[in-house]
Length: 207
Image 1: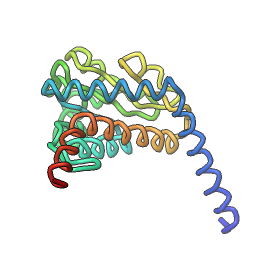
Image 2 (image 1 turned 45 degrees about the horizontal axis):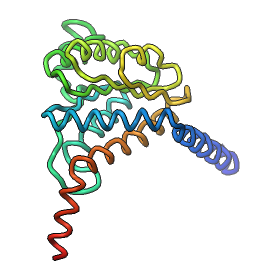
Image 3 (image 1 turned 45 degrees about the vertical axis):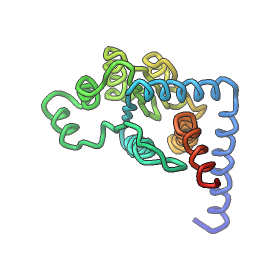
């Protein structure tokens, strides 16, 4: 690929990403994200946790977000309970081998999910069988179900209380969009649960 063509491709992809993120300013989308953050806050205050899951790049994103909750996002504070179901390779492969790959997350959900927890399924297609099975299991466990997916994620939307459907069918653009929203979600949760504590500590230090 020539340098000139490479530059054209770069600019086009950046424009596509910007256009997708502009679409996320719509009232419906912003209200969905605010509702998700509110549910995570309410769950945390009751002693609940966030359970995330997805395949491939979505598995990596689930792990990334779990780390943001357990560690920190923008400032030091107490840890929040969160886990990614793809992180236990022994469980994933044992369930896939002994039962079926479609149950890799659902069986873990049945073991670990509790009423009032928040289940967040991530699938760019919205049709990954093991993600959908996990959402079904989460509903049976009495968990609040959330989905991050693309424009074709109708099946996922049927299984979730809130489903953010990014207006794209391009995997990379969908991932870029939902990770922007997921990071904002982490910020909102952290601020609501620990913002006052941080501000009080700052006042004490200033005094």
